[in-house]
Length: 619
Image (cartoon, rainbow, N blue to C red; front, side, top):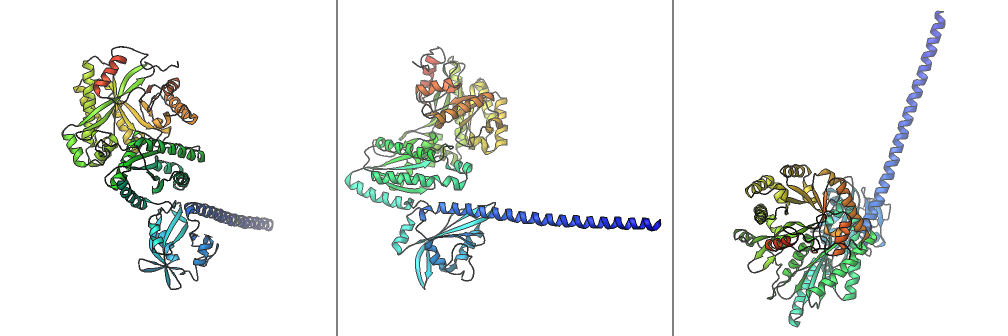
């Protein structure tokens, strides 16, 4: 009996050992399989990354197809090499830099460097920017050929995927100088060439007593486009725009320059007036926007421009005035064209504002408020206004805010100017109340500097109490970019204002982060749709759909909507049909002094009720 039991125990032990060994073998096989699978996936992922990286770099170098171009993997293996480069590096696709890796040699700042050293230099700098090496030399058969090098890398998850190098050869110093005047990305003349050509044209036109104009054409909110679509994807629209403008320039004998990443400059000779130049530029902008929309119908592209006419003065001022006009255009909204105006003496009104002038203007109270009417679609009358700052300069006349507000923010005067606006607007509400206008609401714009540095709610509370004004008569407008700069802080400040009874409006909706989730993030009373969506919505079905969606979504969340930029009866009627609560634009009135706005509300909104003053129904 004991023997039988021992035999069964031994067999049981044998069975357990067999299954244990079998299980271990299965686990090992599974681990090996998993390791192989992960290696395979990693290999495929790397292949895909290299393939996409190569395509991205080839797109960047698309204007340099006739130049020697090579693309390396992260291990310095050649993944692309055109015929021109193969003669120089002696390597083909699939080969690595080894053996004779020190060939070719380049002379850079009196130091000989191999191609591998240049690649390592770029990789170790860990920069996503272009590395441009000018005034270099290619050492070939003991001869130095003047060249410049362009190095671009594609990064994936903080690791470099591939690196591309383009060798821009120069047969002599003249060609080397040409590289200095060429935008490396589009191959168009750059800002150095623009300044040189403008100086030459100024001399020629001065003797002939003729005028010419410069126009800067800029893609709106390009940084926002990059943040949404990605850096490489956003760059794809630049060559499209360059190609179109180049065709326009050739046809009309204009001169085109690529002066910044998303900025192009046109020189238009023999221009008789600002209006002639504006009409031309507006047409090219419209066609360019259509071109960009045609290549990406899912994104809203707009282009703004600034124009300056050369009559006399420095060529540097000509560029500055064009950029100042562009700044005004972008402040007005997306897709605008603005020209730097001249007074009878020929001096540019939009010439740069100086620090001392702003300081003096604040001391001598040269600033004032203008009021642009806001129309209530349900009450069918003007019930409020947006307070807009204006500067009446003693010699230049009225200066638009786009010219001086950026300087005010930079020099620290914004807090003082913001307090002036609040005091003036609330004081004016007090005056209107005494005259019998009880229900006028005024909106005040709040800048980033004011929003972040001032206890604005306390200042407003004190001013409202001292003037015996209800908090409901005041509204604070904050742009979505300012609000998103610090979401937690913005939410807290909005809450403070609303606890006092002051309404909060989110301005320029659709031009910054453009997300409906913002309506849930912030507790706001009103949302203002940017003019770029409102204008031409009658002809543009996409804009109409976007505006309708914003209004519907806002109302579902209990938020009222105001549309700005309304310039015609058709657009006003269409917005009313969509249920828009308030409207603002030149159709209802331009920004005007307090006494003019007072007369408007006396006739239409305050003491009498003339519903047919601004008819919205179709005839």
